[in-house]
Length: 412
Ligand code: 5AD
Ligand code: SF4
Image (tube, rainbow, N blue to C red; front, side, top):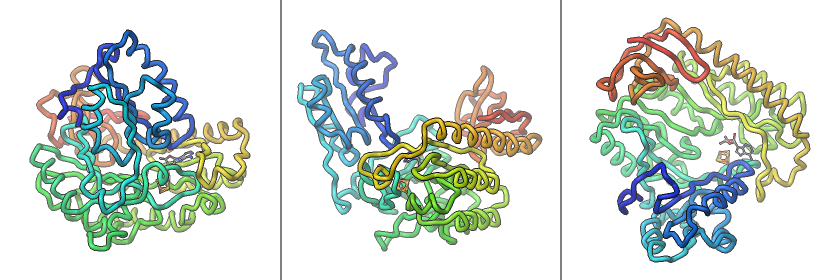
């Protein structure tokens, strides 16, 4: 959007015409971080320099025009439903106008307001299929800062994917807070499983990923896609959050450890080489040692290839914030350490058997070292190998020769 207004990226903030902070508030500390960063950025604007300072994303949504009041050098505050106003807001700011827009927009008016995401990669792109969330997990601020769940029209999604395919994109990542509830609210749209099948019919798109799935909405129909849609990646991000049923209940997740494991079993039956990634929160209010051991044992049963783990962080306004945040910091950190240690072992143990195997890698650009190129394998792991830029954009068969914690090394 900014490119259309004549702006281009720069590495030099001091000389820039605009600084835009895109913010996240899913865990605490985000607001303070944003205020600290803004205080630091302020020095660039001294001496009456005409520079636009803008704040977007969830912290902007939360703080609203309070940001303009508290910080006289901030020009624009753009909420999560107001991105379409960015062009006129920037034009106004160029004339010295200060403005905050954080009004939520009703779902029936939002359908035409999904901006295309122009990522860095020419070959792999995110495509928004839905936004917002109605789940209200007790710890989570997303429903408050992103608003109600809305599914985009399938016709718009497919048109965007076709357009990307024409531009040479080979992989799409279907994006939403909870992609597998896609279309459920609307009624007249295809299910998420059908949407995947429709995307798979588009020539030129050879790999499809999606994120994030809520385990409770992982339908048999969607699971069956892993059996009969070869373009669907063999990696799935399926956040469990905890392995303890009592914690899951307090979190309001809508599934049990057993039903989660059941979905994993079904997915493995459909796609034996599938790999799982996930999210876990430690130190949720009331989490006992026994609860935590349950989380570790869930990890042992699943064996994630990669895991994002977080210390619970109370978010104002959420239901869990009313529960006593009763775990001492040291306990939370010790749990996180143990969990991460276990995860490092799993990543190592799961990666070793890939050595000697051949993977099809979509080459996206330069590798870690000179003379190397880099890309992603079907299982989502980064693979570096010797090769030149003529390989970029191709699926190349690569033999894996070494496994590192965050990537694999291969050779053609
Ligand atoms: N505290 C800690 N982690 C959280 N997440 C979401 N809200 C919180 C919170 N209040 C984590 C969840 C989610 C991921 C994006 O962030 O694991 O899946
Ligand atoms: Fe937050 Fe995800 Fe739960 Fe929605 S489903 S409330 S985004 S954790």
